[in-house]
Length: 255
Image (cartoon, rainbow, N blue to C red; front, side, top):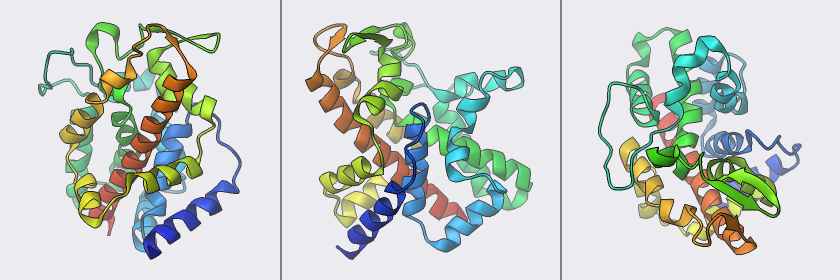
């Protein structure tokens, strides 16, 4: 009970800050959730390698540079597309799964890496943990993770991927308070939380993919308020899980 009170207190402190721009909101929330779960030692050690970059900036960096030609090679790192009737198979080309696993290996041996390499690894880690928990970043190749599925939401045309990336977050004006409520609603015992925070990238991916039947609207291309409400609850839980799992990784390698 004391831990939950402290968690909610930290969230209320964050609520006094300005609302984030909608595009990077989800990634910033994941970073702030992770930070709220860590002690000063871990935060200080991570900050040392971030070299003045905030956690929110680190979480959004991959999206901010993806249009720059010199970062073209990172485009496939944000997602993994697998057909509905197929299972994940390791490939040589980097995707969100094997790139995250690579980041974990780099952090395991961070004492052998330069500070610049650890810095970049953290920027990748902060972002990709968030991406992996968006179900359509683990979606179907046939529709490019929902990018080719047209959706009409309250007289607005969008696509399914963007709907889940930002439109629902914008519609619900999600913030740290929404995520705090999601945590309470999850009713995590110590045992359940330990299982949730177990560091296994492929299990996280499979968990996200299991949500896909709920992601695709049963009513076709038009979504109603009930769909938006139900989807918002899933998104809040996924943001919370991503934050807790990012915190677990940072605690393991930066304590």
